Amino acid sequence: MYTRIDGKEVSAAVRENIKNEVSALKAQGITPGLAVIIVGNDPASRVYVNNKKKGCEQVGMNSFEYALPEETTTEELLELIEKLNNDADVHGILCQLPVPEHIDEEKVLNAISPDKDVDAFHPVNCGKVMTGDYRFAPCTPAGMVEMLKHYNIDIAGKHCVIIGRSNIVGKPMAMLMLKHNATVTVCHSRTQNLAEIAKQADILVAAVGRPKFVTADIVKDGAVVLDVGINRMADGKLCGDVDFDAVCEKTSYITPVPGGVGPMTITMLLKNTLEAAK
Ligand code: NDP
Image 1: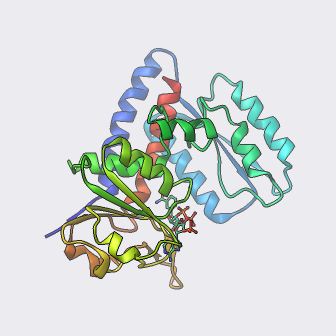
Image 2: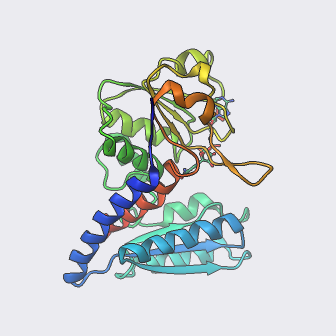
């Protein structure tokens, strides 16, 4: 028998705590505020931005949206970020990715003040995640740690295998797992004998971006499986990186897609905004 990790339930519990802390801050005259910048008309980005705004409302925070036209230049975006860096009502700033190709994404992310960088993408915050001394952890990995804690799943001493080494998921997840005393292995597209390695995982994290990449034969009996993948299938449905139906019976805990890791990401963004305001 396995337990399905319910990201919506964990998310609701964390948001309740955030809401209470926001109320306490408001009583002191501080309302946490998140500025969300969106450039262009990407429909998926629009959905994410709307959800982030809704999340802010739900916990009593302010959200400030800056919807800029597709033809916005890097310089114009940098000017806006500078203004927001100096705005005392704005505690967190995020620029929804991807930005249009003509915009210098690295310059934009580096312009956000590390103190307001609630996505934790700025090199200063990446460095802090590396040293283990951070205020903002990147939202998706932080959400997974929160889920493990919520279900009282031990991390210390466990072998955590992460498939994927992106800067926003795989690499920071490795750092957070190390901070929680796991033994960590990171796999990627050049990894040899990935199946053998994955099979040793007590905690297996799939952040590959390939539907049903993790099959039952590469999962150890009793493993905890966290599925980060969000893949849109031809029929419009979402599918994770894990073949859930085939894998679930082998696991002790597993996250579904949708309803697993996904709901936690925005919640951790709200948590980081609260931290910034504090
Ligand atoms: P990236 O594309 O940046 O990284 C994918 C990683 O998977 C890379 O490190 C790549 O290796 C590795 N990989 C690809 N193919 C293979 C393979 N055949 N064998 C082994 N490794 C492989 O993706 P992200 O990390 O940004 O996202 C991963 C997934 O998670 C996506 O589906 C994305 O939509 C989803 N996601 C979900 C979030 C959420 O809130 N739930 C948030 C962020 C992402 P290499 O480095 O060698 O190319």
